Length: 81
Image (cartoon, rainbow, N blue to C red; front, side, top):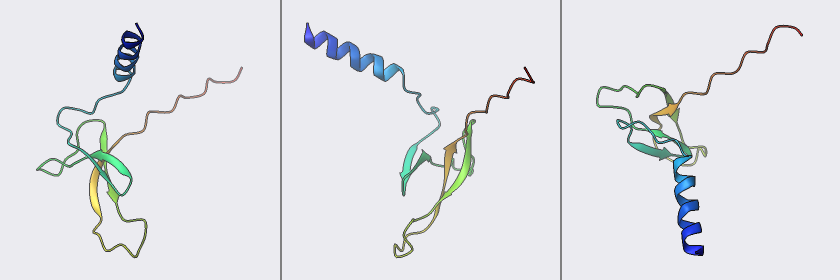
């Protein structure tokens, strides 16, 4: 019985996570998670280009452009009540 509860819990948690688009190859570079740019240098819909650079200037690694998910639009406040 406990085994079924664990399996059911894992399945429910998996459905709650949003999956990246099918044309998105996931990448994490210096703590920034996103997708690789396409061969044409484009991002999938809902993503924008962002530069990911080393946070420590002593690290001699190049900066890299990656696609990062767009922020959710902010809700507009309702006019005066």
